[in-house]
Image 1 (cartoon, rainbow over the protein chains, first blue to last red):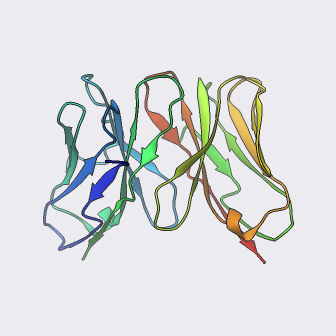
Image 2 (cartoon, each protein chain N blue to C red):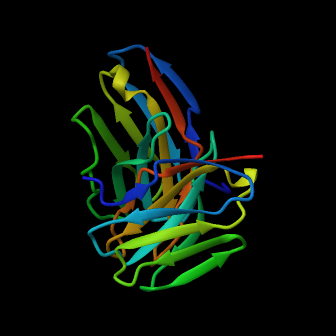
Length: 114
Length: 111
């Protein structure tokens, strides 16, 4: 595809349920990032995948959050036992290998936990 | 830990005014980028600076990277309503490391 694609664009879930968010990066981009953005706030780093290296999970806020990436393609972010404080927009970005490359963002998944 | 601190957090000005927003850190970055995010969209890259002291201009926007590569500024001349948005700086400590974002400066330019 032409850009980073995220699905679903909106998700409303009940507290305690699990959710799975999907990101399709730009083909050929080796780096993939997940960020969380609460209303009116900046980007909070969650996790970073770079090629076949071990992911940098240092931003995951709790063990309820996990992410996987298959090779250099699709990534899924899973939130288990959702809480109301998980409500936010979850943004995915991809970058191609190389120095100083641009991060291309999807439009995000707006998650609302009720 | 927030590596990059942006200030001010919010800025509301009238069309035609000038403004500067700042991005500061105690860490040295190999590169620093500025992005702008409009409501409902993902951030979009404006510029990348890589050399200490570097100045780049993009129409009415001037970006500067500090000599020590720890800070950056964005100056907008004669702001227009179309400049409204969230301005984010993002730094890379070393090539291949995660891209760290600041919390952003939310700019509102009123006619």
